[in-house]
Amino acid sequence: MDKVVYTEQERWLIEPKPGTAAARARDFGIDLSLTVSNLRLTPHERVKQLDEFQHEMRVLRQAVLQSKQNGRNRSESKAVR
Amino acid sequence: MAEIAQSLKLFADFRIDCVVVGGVAAGARGSSQVTFDVDVCYSREADNLTRLANALRSVNATLRGAPKDFPFLLDEETLRRGLNFTFDTDIGKIDILGEVQGVGSFEQCFKDSNELELFGIPCRVISLENLIAAKRSAGRPKDLVALPELEAILEHRRQHNITKP
Image (cartoon, rainbow over all chains, first blue to last red):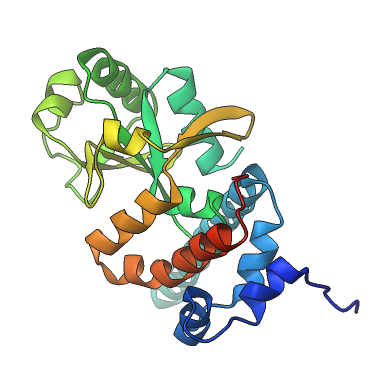
């Protein structure tokens, strides 16, 4: 796997100085490498990525609900037998 | 085309005067937080309310969380009498805000907003500064979680004089 190379500007977020908002975000638990990879994208690419994730979550949720429904139907059908 | 794209296209097709706020705006500004709805702050001008009601009816918008038989007429008058609404629609969850806490009305959200091209559609997106003010003022756990990253992005932009969106 290739090592990610950060620019000086990006390192300001990745290795934040104490007392900065970036340091507070890191200490809060934010993975700033994700932020940096987002900032490399255009606004359209960022929102497209968000849209695709949202869509996948909806598909996953529907699949889980369908699977639960199928399970219930199987249990009911066994109970009838 | 997925939910966010469809919602933005809907607003463009019906020529709705609005500013994208909330999680989609945060995403456009670089936040890695996820969101499951599209929030916009809309103009309260009468013509815009009519267009907005038409747009929402075209995607079968219903009040989120309300019983199926809840009497709700989606028209200009209803939008004029209310302010902030949350809808389930055929194309996903859409929240329309007449006012954004910590920022104000459409006019205030519009000020300092940028026009960004999202999915080939020119969209007004709230400024990072106003987005932070809104999240700070709303103060809900999900807003407070989003704040540190947005503040870090703003500080980063200021520190390095970054002007591109």
